[in-house]
Image (cartoon, rainbow over all chains, first blue to last red; front, side, top):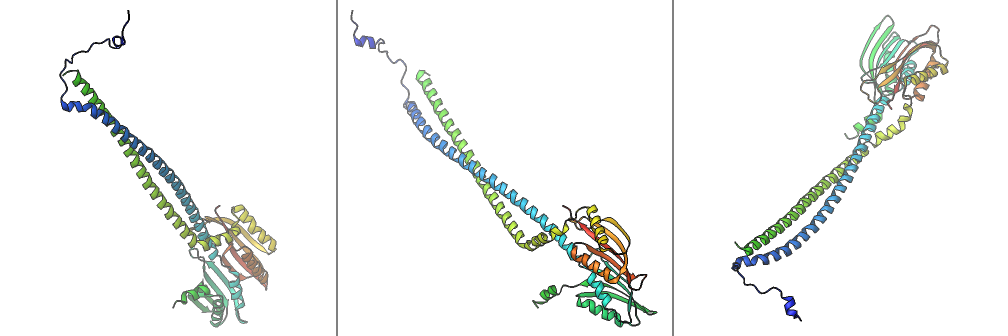
Length: 195
Length: 177
């Protein structure tokens, strides 16, 4: 017995649509579904690409920020080291400025003594707070105050000036006390220049 | 409600899910874009800070060039950094001079207001010798050891005619390394 092709393909007989048709508005739902798939795929793709670009941008900026931060820290360390060096240099400079040799001063005082004068006692003390200044106490065997004027002239030639001098003359001995301050002639010239 | 209505509802649910998914992806993108913007701002701030720091360093270097040069020249003279070596150093100078040394003692003294040189070794020396020899020794010491500070000198007559009694306090700075 032969079976026709149509009989094989169509086992199921046509059935009558028993449910009522959907309203027109609801018939748009499948159409909306296809549209939404298309729009969702397109938008999601755009958003995904933008997401990837933003991730790359964020990572690049973060890496740059980290690099700049490291460089800033390095620069800060360099500045701290430089400030330490400056402090050290300033301290050494202060020490050196307060360590001006005393021997030329002593020799000049000794050389300034005239034939009728002699040093009985000479004391030079650096001031603790200001080491570039000296407290001088000089006792001389002399009969006039001219000797001390001569001595101070000699000291002035070494750029020392006496402040707060006191002198006592009695029994052929002169006691002289003063604070000696060294004045840098080059510095004085520079200070006077703008006037 | 028939099966067609149910099918419509399911399809509508799928549509809602697709909208939610799209909104979620958009939200993620916006969040990362905001993070990227913040990172860009942070980079600009870091760059400004670095520039400012470099300007400050440059200015500081320019202002302190003389001081740094001064330090470079003078630091080698501050080699003595221990009380023992300072004492030996000064003692040797006294011994080498072959002067009549009546007394000598050393003491470690703290130095105020100088953080780089916290201490000095003070040598209290008393001599009685020829005037010229004493003055030459002191002058030579001050030239050869420019960092040594003569804190105090007291001169008075010695026992012999040409002799001078000299009491001197020398300070050797001990640089903090």
